[in-house]
Image 1 (cartoon, rainbow, N blue to C red):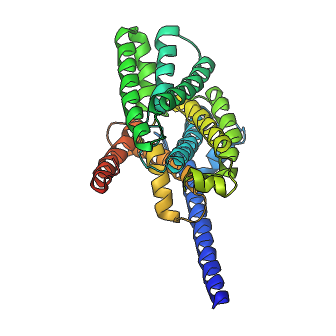
Image 2: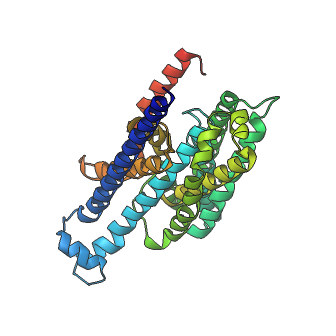
Image 3: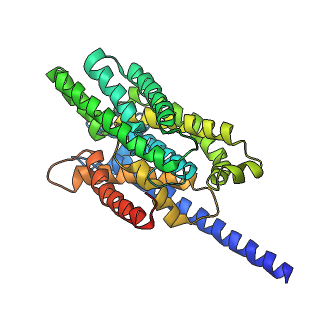
Length: 343
């Protein structure tokens, strides 16, 4: 009887692993298709062979400029930003055991955006300074959020409510900066606020790419401990997880990624909010969904950008499309949580 029970458990684990592998492979393949579409599609649709020749360094009239200067940076910005937003959102939602506890809702993205807008409109600084300021502002927002939400005991509900209030305050500060800024600085600032891949340039991408390549493996390696944190402080400690060090490493890594992504593309709405729940629905539970969530983030950003470019007569930034997708889900989630008494 005991052997049958163990065999049944192992069979279920193998089935869940097989599902994880298949769904992750599908998400990676879909991301590859969308990356190719980003390079092929535009005001002029180029043949695959011409795009490959342009990417290999061959100079083709019209093709090389369109592919290497416009489409490739746009695609890479969406790829790395979507990966960062999706992964960071999954970390916060899992660690805090609440789907509302993501960087968009609790003010972390607004903190990075406020720093970027301040640098653009007041300091008139370059992209490197904006990136550094965004990271510092993101970390400072996390620290302030923790201090303001700390009471006699840690409460996720209190943290979310404080985060929503902090986000409102930061959004008001951003509105004030736009009111007092020079007219010529407003278009650049609005790019950060709407979330857009328009105007992405290759020299702006290395900080984001390096940050993702450094911190994403840390989050993925700590994925097992992240799942234990979801069980609660005492359970995670009893299973051998150093909760304080793990939480610091996860938060610092996630904030760095999302701050650099925000500095590069702006706060693309709801990507970090939607990626984790979609990945969990597709993959199921039992294994870390860090990689699937990151890939869902990539697919959301790239697909939304393609929809914004070609599905309407007027071209819309990617942030508007993801906002249209995410807002109804947020309302649904709030209604459901209110009925369950979780708010």
